[in-house]
Image (tube, rainbow, N blue to C red):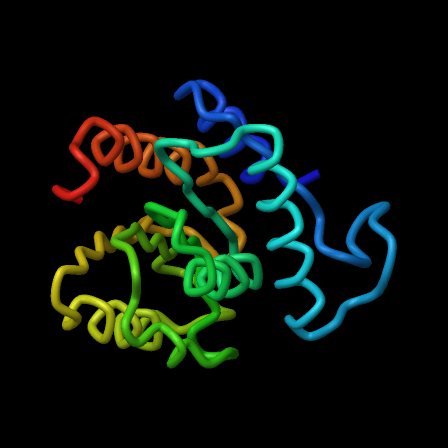
Length: 177
């Protein structure tokens, strides 16, 4: 029941994207318990598999995650070549290792709040710098002024930032991203 998740879901749907949102195991009414990433990555892959059975050979596949979900989304990106782009919101760069993103297979957007007390901005900047240094990868980094880790009262700013980025990327040929 996160307003940012709902806003992003409706934004992607509004862009005519087939969209799915889900809770990781142990969150809300989901079964299971927290598995420190392994089970959650398996769950995300299962959701993508399910989507691929319903809609085979899509022209665009985006993964979008917030905080822990951003870390899982980036791991999914590394394992699934059909993913064409990513949106990583408040990636927990100070809490989890993102070294697996070498090389990163797709360009994407990273969004971070300037008042994030959970993940320090310099750690996210290091992640952005590491990804940007990779040949052929374009990382757009947007900071939301005054936003905390959960983007309380800044949900609309994040949704608009993501909408602008994704709309622009989807209007370009895949090789021009």
